[in-house]
Amino acid sequence: MQPTFGRVLGALALATATMAAVPSTAQTAASASQPRTPSLELAFTCTATTSEPVNGSRFWMQGGSAQIHGQFYRGLGVVADIAGAHVADIDSTGVGLDLVTATFGPRYTWSPVHRRYSIYGQGLVGEAWGMNSVFPNPGGAVTTADSLAFKAGGGLNISLARRLALRAFEADYLRTQLPNSTSNVQNNFTLAGGIVLRLP
Image (cartoon, rainbow, N blue to C red; front, top):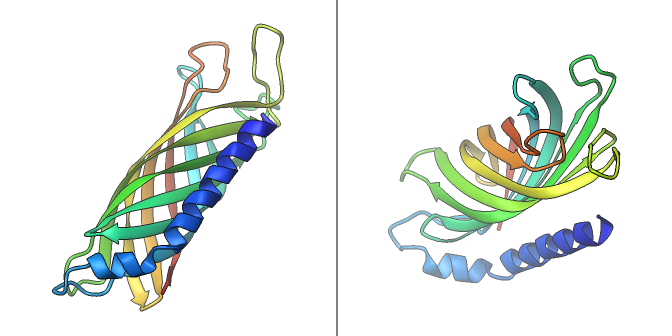
């Protein structure tokens, strides 16, 4: 699991460096009739995630996320997202779960002229790591596992100042494929809110 984790973090680092290297391109591509769009945004949120690992079973996890978003052309951009969630006791079984995801992909943002809000939608892919839990497999149960992660959703930002915005909400569907002795698929839904820092 460790080599894969390193590759994903390396890819996210490369994406972050790429986004940071092109602020002038984003500004040049913007239409003269549109307000200047910040080239980079950093978002920090608190999250609540409901997970359905087995039919009929559902539980909540609490956590947070950090995102870096670069907008390049007419609302189009890319975002890198690292999120973590935790539950200490799943359905009174005495088994907990720590879930970490690292995802990357496109985001489209719509910002009405002369309005303080922006709405965005996104589709991200990456990897999920489950830790400090029980994951059954043919060789016996293990405490850690990893899988592909797919995240799709969107949210609303409200400007508070030139460099600061409120993430009023973000709602995402998150699919993971960690071993669970049945379908090996988890359908997760996440709600988040926090702050957005806009960089020059």
